[in-house]
Length: 181
Image: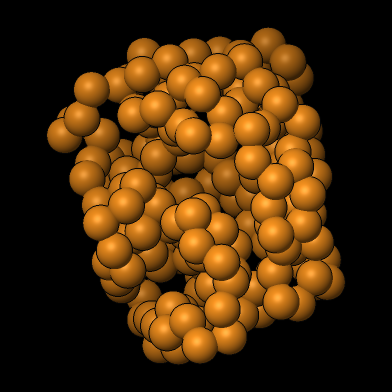
């Protein structure tokens, strides 16, 4: 959710506290718009992040929410490149994911591979533009939950503050509820 982290996906770089430096997208321009949104599903933490250590944030579209999030207006190519980097791949102009992104319809899902962030989901629409995210192929109740690292929680906190203007107490309460989920 953090604009600073998104900039690393688009322009290259390493978010504070991360173990990975991102290559950046083929189109490094920042989003044309951004807004705080609420998604219909729920956030949970599971697995062990190679980037942050500790639990990874996943989104389960099929469990009641809402989940506060931040929407960015990016091109299909930029979205494909961001997703590729989350899938530990190099952005590639021949990646079929860009075509998949363009062709997804309301409430569609597409499994790009077996990895943690390789399931694309259309989570809604904003101003006539589909909103997409990527997450794990399994849901909240299918895996053991794990504790996220402090740097990861800090990055998520920054995104919640930017997107929704929440106080530190509200952010902590929300994130703790996701950890306990």
